Amino acid sequence: DVVMTQSPLSLPVTLGQPASISCRSSQSLVDSNGNTCFHWFQQRPGQSPRRLIYRVSNRDSGVPDRFSGSGSGTDFTLKISRVEAEDVGVYYCMQCTHWPPITFGQGTRLEIK
Amino acid sequence: VQLVESGGGLVQPGGSLRLSCAVSGYTFSNNAMTWVRQAPGKGLEWVATILLDGTRKFYVGSVKDRFFISRDNSKNTLFLQMNTLRAEDTAIYYCVTGHWLDYWGQGTLVTVSS
Image (cartoon, rainbow over the protein chains, first blue to last red):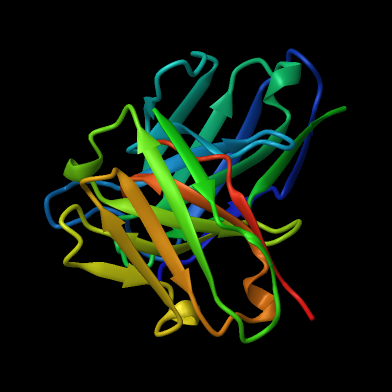
């Protein structure tokens, strides 16, 4: 199974400052067709998760452009250009290239300093 | 897109529950469907996925031969039959579209305890 490792696990950020979350996979997420099945999710307190970024760098509908995803192979990054109060929550990376099983990272808790 | 789960509750170890998920505003019959769970205070865990025609099903190892995913494309409904439940199955169970996990329901809480 592919292991997804996120860092940091806790991320205190000042409002208006940037934030960055890293996710590393135990093997390359590029499939035989050159595609990468890797997504980012946000879970606000008391809410269901929602997908933010799909296929590494594509924002889902309604996701503010302060969120961006990048990376390739085994190393991926979610960046928030300027953190707002509504960004508080837990962020998860996920891979579906080598499935089953689909696997998630442990989650990174973003909080406001 | 709306996904509404039901069927959760309190069950004793060794018992069974059947979860349902009614889906609307989505081309249900043309897409895979997935269950994901989240134990209290923990992260997300993929449980099972069923492909669009229901012929192929995939499970996480810890639930194989105990949980069974199914679907009724005529009613846009997804199911999860959970048997021989254990304390470690206690979690919120989310119904999710596709295996890219596009849209999530609000979840239904399953508590396994005596």
